[in-house]
Image: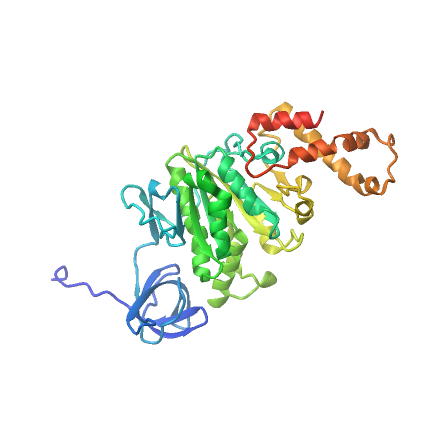
Length: 434
């Protein structure tokens, strides 16, 4: 008798919509993160349509939803149908060379993505168990001299690029995408300016870089839920290729905008602001996101580069401070170097890779240590040298630094189209140090 009864699907109704949030009744058991369809939405042409939303909170007996689009046309009485299935996306090899939005929909005008093969991936999967993960692998050949030598990136390592706007982060990411020996590159452009997306894909990434890349995009004019989703989608795509046995290079620009999107979501759903206006959920979500990168349980790995926007040189800003404590090293790019035409504008003395010196041979470590010592010596005396107050012969180490600094600075610079292999990079460093 019971088996023969038809199923009646429960639904709720919108009772209010304000700001970024829609309140509805009738869905008291819908857990956080549940996807919902809001129907009977009034479209500009007068017809009824629908939109996708997500449960972001519960308050005073009402369920709070945030749409992935705007709130236009949503009003009291709209029906809300929860999707009982977890949020997944079907990823396969046809994604290579494609640009998709935060929901996994193609936005490059090249047609639909193939649904044949691959597997459904959760956009909110947990990081692999620490006890089951592999150790970090050997150094990855990034094709960038300063990173191959002084700031190595090992397979499965996670580095942060800390910089202000306009100092060359995107150009450095393009160099890594084109020149690294990673099997697959997954790029997440989170909260980017719309104009810069095509510039990055066509001019910086180029055809060669795009051919082995997947680009996930959410521009800064999209709702915060889409911007957060873009970061989660980027991770899900990288995890698919990692589990296929590939060594993946993941680059996300920027994790700061992911944090800002989470702050908007938190504030809209009633979270209290804490440090500099950031909500507690921001600092809960950051490690969940960043820990998903790293070595896999099987053959594959995700080596990750996360960019972090810093105001001026404020490395103690809450997001920057939290991210630096999670990652396996940080690269600091400064405006002062960029203004001098020193590209990539990496301040070696402020940057560190936590796999050094373990990943280097004795010969390589001696070269790296000597180079850092020379740069530090020159930096300490730079003002006296510029003023002409330093007397040659006063200190042999300073004399050597003055003699070699031009060659070392030339070694640290590199044009975007120039590629330097691992062995070549160390040979050039040895030559620069005399």
